[in-house]
Length: 137
Image (cartoon, rainbow, N blue to C red; front, side, top):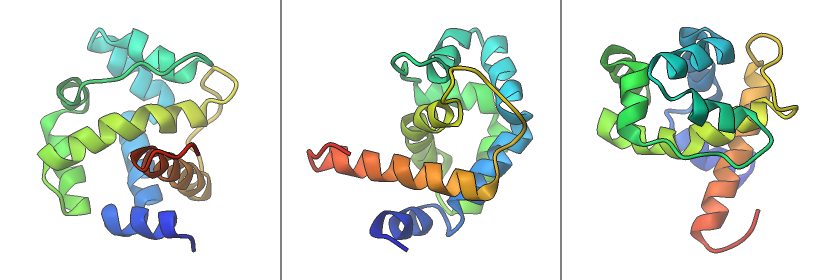
């Protein structure tokens, strides 16, 4: 296991892929998540993550409104952080995760496997940590 996988597991309660899988399953997969963004009037943001263009940012408050307080509190409890801590992290990493789950610019298939999510999350964490230290991934 590499350094970034270790950091990701420590930072997210030991099971980042399982947490992502739960988040996607609760939302109804990527299609369900897209529906939630549409209902909140933020479909353009989600569509930018799916498309092959640049990912538009999302504000943590918007993400909280999309997820709902109960789901956010449950997720925060599972990882041992407060919702105030986890929201900025999710706002930073979720666009990249969705982008990597949709390499062809469209939502395909059902939920990704835990192994796929672990691999994607590790890549996203590596990219995020590399940018913190001024290195390109």
